[in-house]
Image 1 (cartoon, rainbow, N blue to C red):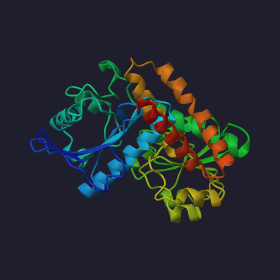
Image 2 (cartoon, rainbow, N blue to C red):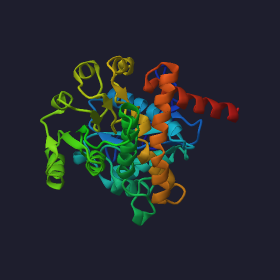
Image 3 (tube, helix red, strand yellow):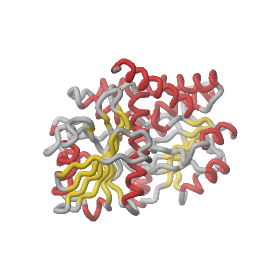
Image 4 (spheres, one colour):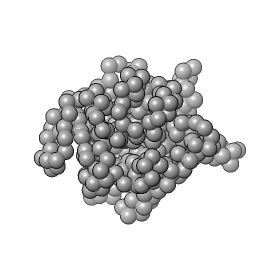
Length: 362
């Protein structure tokens, strides 16, 4: 690991680093910043991934989340065909309580200290306005506002990509790339989820939602009075006639208990790291549930911010995000031919691309 405290950089190595190239612990006492930056791989290019701002219970939980998220970004960027490796940052604390301009500027300085090995963007708890602040001390910042040369809200194309993955799932499962007449349950209707709901309604789906934030639910019902609301995720996954379950909140949504009672035949959502532990993907397959790998279908956002590095063009980025439909179908085909779950098939394809890049570099 690399520890950074008030501008001092110290490199540490840890047996549990899990194949990650570098882990940076950041602390700025003046602003109260405590953050972790994890770089999983730069085989394909500079690591690219967002900044999560979340009230972790302790530093160990934050490090674990950063490591898992960074690894997921390596696979996501590889499957999206981007010339980027995987990285992720987490800032420890409640953004509603401790987020300040000084903290974000300090965070930007730490990202800049990596010299371009890591390119950051928005994630849970951070927004376009935050990236505009971070960019003042770090030129390796994406997800900025259009007024500041950025692409704006990456949740727009994240939702669009998930919708393309869901269309591919429908094509594979039911023979038609349409959700018309299907019932889709969306758990989490925040930054990404509320855009996804719009795509689904436009396609003719029946939508059921839930969210722990009442204001998010109120926004959805105000915009779309026909959307059905249930109390919680446990209720949602048991809805009779549910065709698709879309986890769009935090990770770990698919665990042993969830899989055992899930009524949907397809799982396709925006959340990262949906599989709570290894083996869940096999349990889903054994129950006949088609799982669209999360890091494949939710890659629209990273496609959008990667395009920003070349002078953002929305239509160009949208066209690339549209290819998530074909990529998802290719994964299902590979899973069938190899006799493995789709998650394992996606991993094999991503690992092959990263391995080929390492060989080329060598």
